[in-house]
Image (cartoon, rainbow, N blue to C red; front, side, top):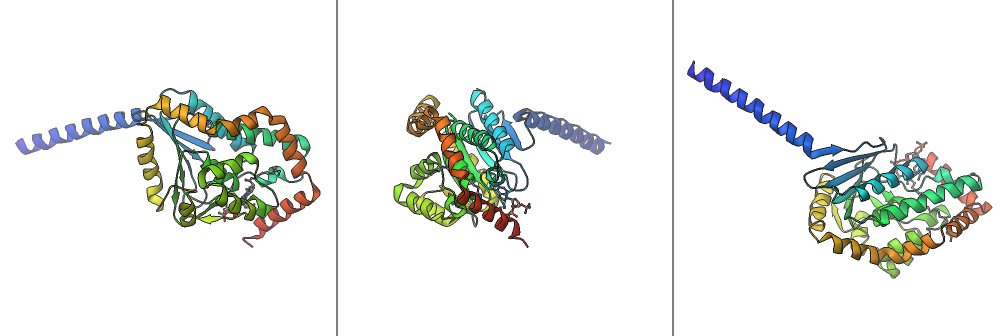
Length: 292
Ligand SMILES: CCCCC/C=C\C/C=C\C/C=C/C(=O)SCCNC(=O)CCNC(=O)[C@H](O)C(C)(C)COP(=O)(O)OP(=O)(O)OC[C@H]1O[C@@H](n2cnc3c(N)ncnc32)[C@H](O)[C@@H]1OP(=O)(O)O
């Protein structure tokens, strides 16, 4: 009887403990109301937001995803309980992001292209201007706009065995000046010129060598490593962090802010050229036929 009472007490204690743990866990992870293409969880203990891009099949940045990411980062900027963020992809081991949606640049009206480019500008200005520490957990391929998005973060942890780069010239298009400046800031002018002129896609290890990414790890270590560095970064006095980040990034952002309409006109004029349209069409077709 005594033994039974002891084990019953143990069961009751275990149940109480697990209920307490569950309460603590559910209090510590807050899921932001979010579109299902950008899932966001906030750990209320640390204030870290994990933003997971979840638009199948490859997180290509179409109007919907650009807007959802931009809105999410604006909210995280304004949320004083958020101390820093991690940007990652649901398609781990496969793709971080396939970059801008090529379909949005092929055989479209000037109005469509103009609206699309305005969204690209807003996405860049919002993530690049995000005032808190931001770490990219690059858990898959990150070509073109996917690479640019990773470059907008303050630190990059990449999975081994994938590729990353601003390879726009391979499509017959050219990275805009604000993408090019991201690359120059990370790897210096010499590597950036080589990378952009040749549309070079780096393997994770090559990217590490030139400073395009900061760490290369195996897949199950990508997010934990990102969290570790975010913990360190958020210990820096944040008013100083924000002021420093802002003044280092301000010049290129201001150049864009001061002439957004001119930049849109430039993009539309460039993309609508018949030879550029032909190149984009050919690239799209090759992409679709790759699997056949
Ligand atoms: C001097 C003046 C300058 C002014 C500026 C002017 C112009 C600049 C403009 C813009 C800059 C451009 C930036 C960009 O980001 S362009 C985007 C280019 N992206 C790529 O090249 C990546 C292409 N994708 C891939 O390489 C692969 O998909 C992948 C990411 C390596 C993943 O490979 P995986 O085998 O896993 O998937 P699939 O290839 O089978 O793809 C699945 C499915 O998705 C379609 N798809 C892939 N990427 C894109 C994309 N970026 N946009 C739209 N659709 C994409 C692919 O075709 C498949 O479709 P399907 O229907 O066949 O299933």
